[in-house]
Amino acid sequence: MNWIRSLIKGRSLRTSVLQAIPFWIASLVTGVIAVLYTKLFEQAEKWGQLIYKAHGWTIFLLAPGGFLLAWLLVKQVDVYASGSGIPQVMAAIELTTPEEDGLVKRLLNVRMMLVKIASSLLMVFGGGAIGREGPTIQIAGTVFRKIDEWLPKSWPKISKRNMILTGAAAGLAAAFNTPLGGIVFAVEELAKTHISHFKTAVFTSVIIAGLTAQAFLGPYLYLGYPVITQSSAYMLLAVIPVALLAGLGGSGMGLLILKILNWKARLKNKYAEMTFVLLCALAMCTIAYFVNTSILGSGKAEMSQLLFTGNKRIGWQIPIARTLGPLLSFTTGASGGIFAPALSAGATVGAFIAGLFDLSASNTNLLILSGMVAFLTGVTRSPFTSAILVLEMTDRHNVIFFLMLSGIAASLVSSLVSKHSLYEYLKLQYILKLRKHPVNAREDHGQVTINE
Image (cartoon, rainbow, N blue to C red; front, top):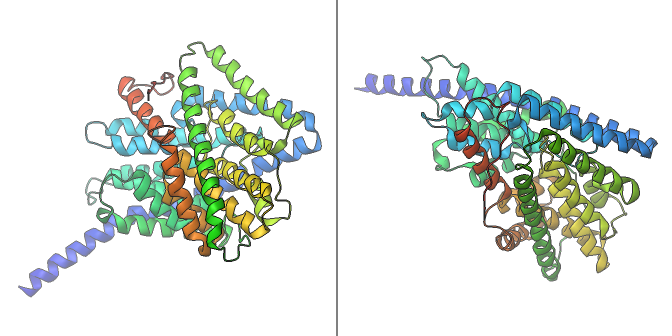
């Protein structure tokens, strides 16, 4: 009987290894693509900034040109490359059933991936307030799905849903260099089944994708090490109001984006949509030229300035600009994420409130991080993911309880604005759109309105 047990164990081990290999390969590929995309994104943003900083008037050419080309690319080639990419992945996970698995290919395919990258690069070059993190998650989901699709029929069966979900976690980990954030994101935002069924796949994929990115970029922190000394309990009196205000800001921005997208979906004329995109671009460049350039770009530069320089005092117009920027960029329908812009908007809320009370640099940094967590929570309704992401970006473990409290407070107050996150509503729109028009992505320009 012992030899039978050994044989069974041997077969089980062989099956487990064979099932793990596709995850490992997909994680390596995801890490490499994430690094290349990061480099391209940073260069596109840098070149755009260099041009309009040298000649301010050029923003009136860069923004309309970048926005229009980015929108046209999505509109004409693949409409499912629009926006963040996270709602598409959420929809793909829900649609991954034997009956509807064909619809998933519409959301996660190589054509979409190329359009996603190109469109987001055009947007950020033109000054669009977008991030690369959401697109990286959709790209990673595509990589994992394609690897699964290429497996021979004789290969041990792997859950397609778990494959895509694991890809999303690996994508976030590689984009932000936040392995814990990727895992928590998979559990809190994406998973509908118990994580014990695929925890090993998630953990190893996040590690491999993260290590691959680090091999090229080094063991960097997304932001760095802001100075925050041990804060006393009285800072709760400042953290909670910042969390409530930023949470309302994030959820309010998400609700406005949804309403504008639903209104825009009723524009049947392509030229009317084009006019809307150009108006968004003109609004961006007008504010940038006459008010403040903070409205432009992903917002990483603003976060770094507030956290690591002595220039921490900002005016009321900066938080408004950092909120308007993503709203004007995201509603165009071009590619681009909202994670980094939401973090930067929250950072400006925290800095502004700290300036009102003339707090020390250390306490100001605490409010900046709290605002980042809260604003992102308002958009995503994922308080623990937001807290862990900001924690890993800055390595400030001594304020973890403040960050978690900010996320929880923001989540509670956000429910007063809308019942669900922007991602949840957009996920439902994608699912309904696919079920209604399951044939050609390039011809499917409609959008389903989801009412509160």
